[in-house]
Image 1: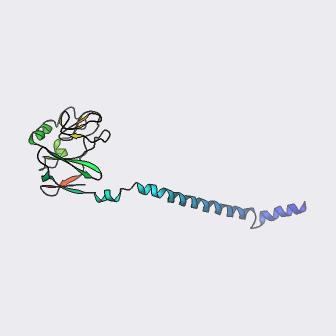
Image 2: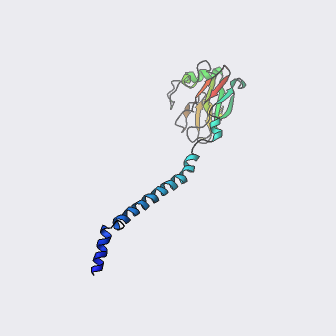
Length: 188
């Protein structure tokens, strides 16, 4: 019995006793936690990195287009950042109609035609060609307001790309763009 008491006393006061083992145990826990965090970062990084834009998308951050190719009353669809963009050369009658409708009561997202076009280039309308309801591509020259019609759920847009009827909550998006010359537009 005396031996067991001496053994217990030796473990309590000795540097290699339970206090020393607790220190080693803490180090093992810290090292294992650090290794787990490092492994978690290594596993998560490819997923996080995959959310960055692809190189081909970044390369198309801006695109130049010659609007002289679009005849009056026609539309051209170009691709910018993987999205369809409608470049429409509107007729004088279409412009008069959308300006007359600037204050129409059925505009879900009130915007004037002047807010959606560039000064001096009003005949040209540049909008992202995705319905703001569910992202379908509206058809040109159809619908009740002389603009676009989305056949998926029945949204009608006017010749200024403003939503006039149907479930779409917002106007067709006007991307950032500028005219670099009288006939060249830069989108993006």
